[in-house]
Length: 393
Image (tube, rainbow, N blue to C red; front, side, top):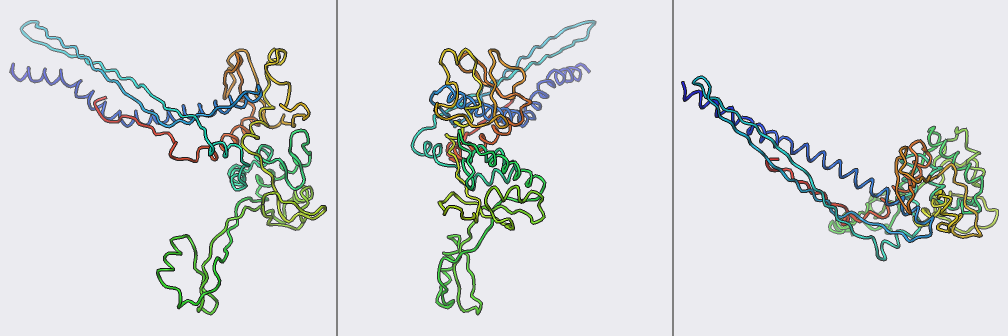
């Protein structure tokens, strides 16, 4: 009986340890999930704060700096404490055990400055029309995207100091048509021949395989005796339904045919004066120009203006700032704000986006997405997250 009792006591004493080991193994997946999401949020927030800081820096005529997160490593430390006790009372022997465990995570982030010709080109070259169309197609907010990234559309200016009210109204009308389903924006795929017709019996199977591997299509002639190698081109376009209520409010200011339904979207080209446009022609801004445009919406403390720390307006005194009250506003405060969705400290002041300022939040979301598309397309610099998942923790 005593031997059986001793075995039972030993089992009870070791049960907490076994449970702890099992619990530690089960919690590995939870730690992976929690760690991944936490670091994802940390990287996103740091990138947004960096972008906001650089917009504020331009308001102070300071140089910009961008960093890329290249690696995230997390080291887990784990410790176990075991307290055991043995007692005797009335001829019976009792034993007990207490187990304690503690673990902590220590992350290490690796950064590299974004420099060089490739980075400078992506920062200073005009935004691609395809990227602009993708952004509008994704969120249908043509007003924000075009006000931010387009400086000219079919003769309507959006430049600093010369914003045409018709530009603003046309972008609002386009947004309304897209949101209400009266217009669509996207890409039209067309097939184009890249070779003249060739006798089918003179084209070897290996040549067809090579053409297929190069992404070319093969189109047979009407008589089946000839074939043509083709390629597919993707062209951005706007489709406005004939029944759309706001057709004239959009097409007339842009000088487009009032009966047009499918309208190509192209880069700006020079045309004859008074010539009716056959397409929506755009002149886009660069990313650097876009954030300089947004820097006009940074409200700096009055003492910084009085001391000459920041310019009173757009960096070029001869040019008045473009209207942006409905687009972007960065407030300032001497103390860390409580109602901020995003905030950064610079020159002893806090600059922030208010939680209730949805127009600014939409604009910042747009410029942040453009930066991710244009500046972070190099997957070799994408951050690598390393988390330990095995072990007794």
